Image (tube, chains in turn orange, green):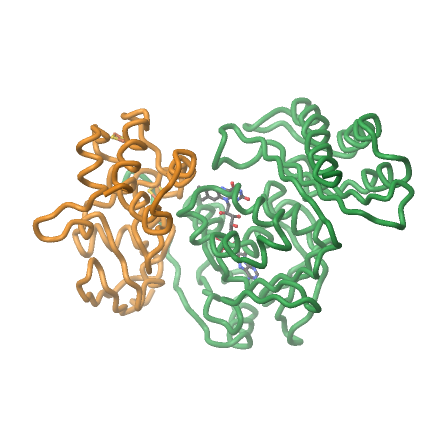
Length: 154
Length: 296
Ligand SMILES: Cc1cc2nc3c(=O)[nH]c(=O)nc-3n(C[C@H](O)[C@H](O)[C@H](O)COP(=O)(O)OP(=O)(O)OC[C@H]3O[C@@H](n4cnc5c(N)ncnc54)[C@H](O)[C@@H]3O)c2cc1C
Ligand code: FES
Ligand code: FES
């Protein structure tokens, strides 16, 4: 099976990677680029732990092939904060106590950032609908929803 | 180590032309598959249900990424147009609301960044959420095959679970819907194990519009998901609600007919008996909802 050379931007940095056809974006991020913030919870599109931004829209990186990301712009949880400053959604999630074990957190952060980018003033039901693909087994969701509401105000 | 198996090995190619893609699929019959979002295919491959040696990415082919509308040709949705784009398209919201409503019920936002309506249709699951609306809006598929482009009605597309009329080398380029009748209203009701994001136990799509050619002055159509080997259009509903004045009683009769017409199975999501009863109740709710919208 051949390798494919792809050029892409990950968190603003140019990357050139050789990938097999069957490598997922998730595995490329974790194994090749050692960006292990993005998590594998199910590898089947169900849990949302692997959510990253691809060309400005959130995707389940377990269901995207790395080779499909040639020329793409990817943002992972590692790319949310700037040098010294957390993204408002990161700060709000910490302040609200919306993180427990943290496994769902990278996906929640990306999905929430994407929501606020497309809808700067989401209602509670819009937040719930936008996060329906992000499972959290710890927090009970209420604090996550509060955090998104707070972040939208910042 | 990964907690879950990855994808089995395959090679990936992304042809530039329909001819190249189709010829490759024919030359590697049984070993190659086209894909768009991969949200159905990759999961089936991960679970080792399917093991193609080659995946042909058809997203780059001409017109795949386009959505267009005019009054004479209606709406044409390229196969690679993802569901979020479809849901947000002004022409869909204005003329084909029921399609947006159905697409909105599929999985999660991030999955819909990749999932497509054409993939939903080609996958041919009886549970496919957008299939009922596509059938009731008289969808037509533009398909590239050995002889060039041809058009096939969706009504005769499905042969069984996962089975369609598509031949090796066929690539669906787009789905097209003519302008629906004036005043068309619709409702999609999806019963899942949870409120959002699960495959349906039962799915009911209903549409209705004013029609001077029926005795009742109204024309209703109903489609059912997850209760037969293929997505099911219940013809009797149109007949019952066209031939007598529409009342709560005749709506109940139509819902009974829907229950009689379906042939569900027992599976992890629900028993056949439960599904039948839900078809009756949800068909009544959906038809009544459309009727109320038509009377406003
Ligand atoms: C977590 C999860 C939740 C889901 N929830 C739902 C849900 O609620 N409702 C629902 O209906 N579905 C659901 N699905 C199924 C799936 O997301 C949808 O069916 C989706 O619309 C498939 O589109 P796709 O572009 O990803 O298809 P793909 O996976 O790319 O393709 C599907 C099938 O069609 C064939 N195919 C694709 N494109 C073409 C073409 N152009 N010409 C010919 N054949 C083609 C492929 O070979 C494959 O067999 C879910 C899937 C996952 C993983
Ligand atoms: S790991 Fe991708 S959705 Fe669970
Ligand atoms: S914090 Fe543990 S899964 Fe969400």
